[in-house]
Image (tube, rainbow, N blue to C red):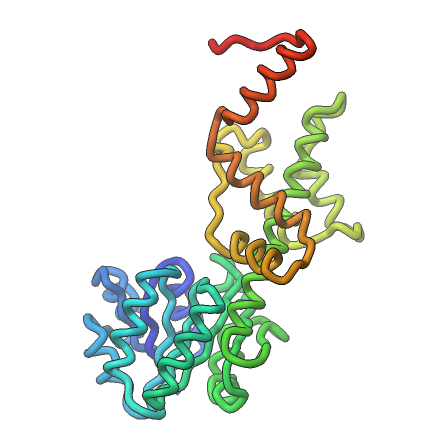
Length: 300
């Protein structure tokens, strides 16, 4: 099976490499030609435009899109809708909103183009360890690309979640859970640091908790790696970006009346991490001074 991959960033590039290592024929395209040339040197067929990519895939063409969510993905899907033919397939593997995937599936179906939404997890480790991929779309289309999924994923690492949008919906919830897990680990280690036992080896604690503890996880392994590199995390700023899926998870919960207190608070904590001095905190300090005469620290 031959696959065209559009978007050769940290995820898309490594997915292309893993497929090449598994003997899959890959055609690669990126807006910056350097990454395309690099993949070509590793065995991929280089394409320097969307037109060239699609023309070189044969029929039926199968294209896997790995671009940032939002306008970059939207613009490329629209352009591919004019290049692909009936029976061709577009697999959208970015972190897109599932509602966009439902809409795109309907748009492409009118043109006879098959569509699969694929939520991809695994990060930079996926190249060596394999990915976890959640797919949505027609069951027949899932079966068609199953050889690709087997090549990309670790054992039991892929699933047909249901109709169009279900792959990206499942990935959205996955990332919401990830927000809550990381926040819990962060708070726990912060409490250790603030305790009389704050000089404890946090990397060793991470290893300990991964040995039979109910809180063991891959994220905890990665925490241990981070502590070994920088025990006090002195080289790391406290700015925590949110990539979108956490917001969408909370918005979905509000729309459906489902209580997600941990995930919601972990999202809000990310917002506060971007502001070294919150206005709300200043107001709270001022109010405590006003009603109780509590001290207010002057700015340095």
